Image 1 (cartoon, rainbow, N blue to C red):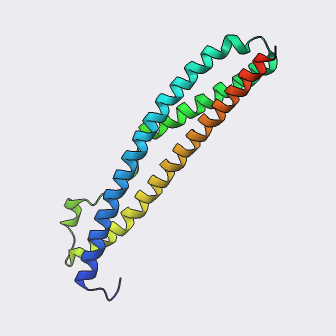
Image 2: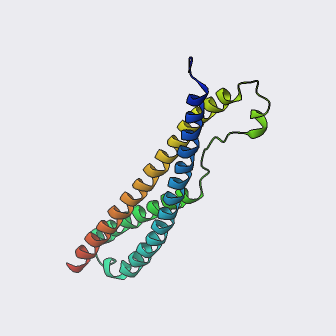
Image 3: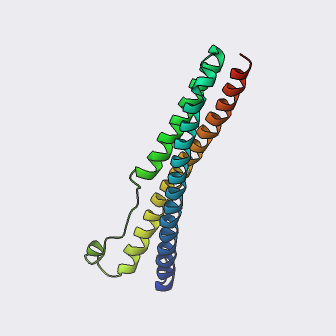
Amino acid sequence: MDGWRDADYELLITQGRAQIARQRSDLEQIRSRAQFLFTTTLAAIALAMAALPHVAGSLSAFLVWTVAVLAIGISALGAAAVVVVRKDFMDIDTARVALQYSPVNVAVAKAYAQSVSTGENTVATQITNLRNAVLALLLGVILLGIGWVLGIEV
C-alpha cells in the first residue's frame, strides 16, 4: 500500500464495506436455505418412520433403511449446525479507529482488507456445510427408496 493516495484508500474502504455487506447477505441466504433443509429432513424422517413396517420383514431392507435414517439424521444435524453455529466476522471498531494516528484512512483500509478475508472463509465454510447436508439428505432418500424396493421382494 506504499505510494497510495487518499482516493485509493477511500476506494478500498468502500469496496470493503460493500463486500462485507454482501457476505452478511450471503450468510443470511445460506441460513434460510439451511432452515428449509432442516424442515425437509424432518419430513424425510417422518417418511422413513412410515416405511419402517414395510421394511421390517426383510433383513437387507431393514439394514438399508437404517443407513438411510442415519444419513437423513446427519443431514438434519448438519442443517441445524449451519443455522445455529457462530459466524466469524471482523468488524471495524469505531472506538479503536478514533485512537489511531493520522492518516486514519490507512488504518481503516488495512482493517477492511483483513476483515474481508475472514468473512469470505466463513461464507465458504457455511456453503460447504450446507452442501454436505444436502448430499447426506439425497443419499438418505435414495437409500430409503432402495430399502422400500427391497421390502417389496419379501
